[in-house]
Length: 50
Image 1: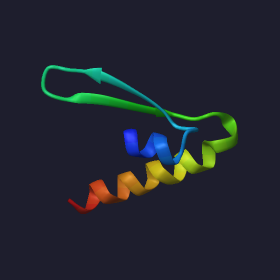
Image 2 (image 1 turned 90 degrees about the horizontal axis):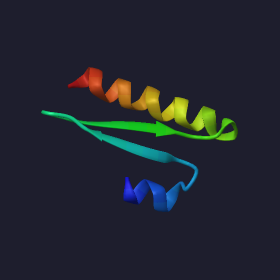
Image 3 (image 1 turned 180 degrees about the vertical axis):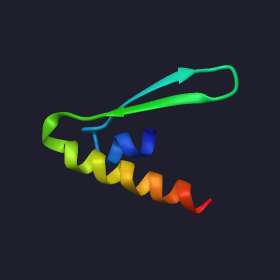
Image 4 (image 1 turned 30 degrees about the vertical axis):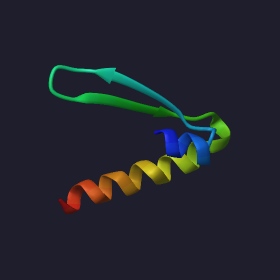
């Protein structure tokens, strides 16, 4: 998150501690929605390959 924030300051990261996992919410303003959508699609594709 620190590296991404340094590179792409338009991302806002929020973590939520859980019992066994840490939740991560990522948000952007409307101008960067397409970037976040592409990032989410990439993450989903990587998850499917595992």
